[in-house]
Structure formats: C-alpha cells, structure tokens
Image 1 (tube, one colour):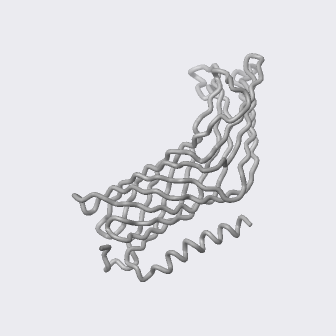
Image 2 (cartoon, one colour):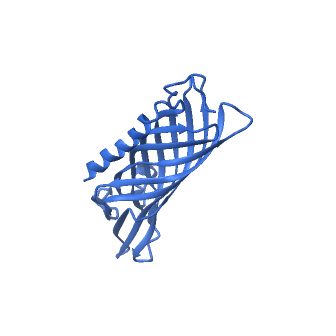
Image 3 (cartoon, one colour):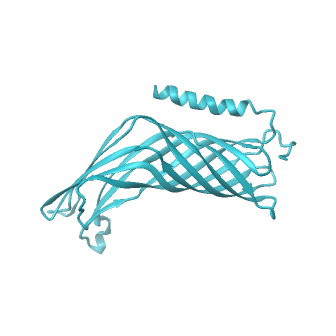
Length: 252
C-alpha cells in the first residue's frame, strides 16, 4: 500500500509536467532543505530535572520539483521527495575540558516520510528584472510507514564513573498525513535561464506524526516524559530550477 501511494504521487506530478509541454513556462528542478523540528511535552511527569534537555531535532529534506510560471507574478510548484523528522534528548554531565565530548548523554530517533508539496506563489520586485521576492503558501501531503525506534545511551566518562542513562522509545503514525507551509523567498534568474531560489519556510502540522517516551534517572529519582511531534518547524530551502524546455517563449 505504501509503495502504491509513492507510485501514485509520482504519476500525478508527472502528469502535471507532461501535460504542459506546450507551455513555455514549465521548469523542473532540485531542492535541498534543512530544519529544526519542534516537539511539545504531552504527558508523563510535568517536572523535569534541571540537567535534562529536550532539543530541536536537526532534520532535512530533498525534493524533485516542477514549476509552472503562469505570468510574471503568479506561479505554482509541485514536488516529490523525502523529509526527515524526529526527537533529540540529552542530559548534561560533569566533564573535563580535555574530554569535552563527554558533556552530554543523549538519545535520538529519526523517521523518514514521502512528501508531495503543492504551493502557490506570488512574485514581486518591480525595480529589478532578474531578482525577485517570492511569498507562497500551500499544502504538503505526506506518507510514512509505521516504525518504532528505541535508543539507550550510556557513557563511561572516567572508567568506573558512569554517566546517566537515558532511554527513548519513539513511534510514528503510518499512512497519510498533512502539513501547511508558508514561504518567504528570494530568487535570481541567470542569463542562460536557470533560477536559484532560496527560501525560509514555516511549517504547521495538522496531526500528530510521532510520539516519544523518555526515561532517565538522576539523583536517585526516576523521571518519565512524553513528547509529540506534529510537523511544526522553521526551515531553509535552496532550489535550482533548470531553464524551460521551450526558452523562446517568454512569460507574459
């Protein structure tokens, strides 16, 4: 079922592209991205030890993208690629400056999903032909396969001295999901027709995507927390659009 969804998504994007070969303003491109996932506490003990940290998870994305410039102001983008998300927790340890790598005990969980972003953009910059500001918004359907990730981290900092343990169990939801996306970007069109596009994106998840269960013991007290990932993040995207297949026809 998961592979059928991947094939169906690819078919939809290909149909958009192939049906527009007569249009002169269609492009294809590649997009790379990075973001910090934001997770929220959702259960377990409300009080956490001062040495416990719930960190932003450093995630990334890569997409094959298609773009249709309707006119000099409006365009639509369609893509298919992979996106990562997850959890990252740590406990600060006593350490020596000569052994700074032992300052953290940490545990993390990573999940991967298929994403098919569909966005509408407005381009503006009346004073410069080849450089434009872009704002956009859209919908990002995602598909993921159910996974359970367990992580246990133990460090022996000074031989017999054991650093704190931290145990993590994380589970994601399977099947389709959805996110809203907002974009602020700047792009430059080169003389040969290629376009470099750099964007800040703001993602808002519509459903819970994954849940994490964390256990650790400090000062003879066992702590237990639950965290939820909904797909909320702020990230960066860098895209390169290749020149149109029919460059003789300009966008009106």
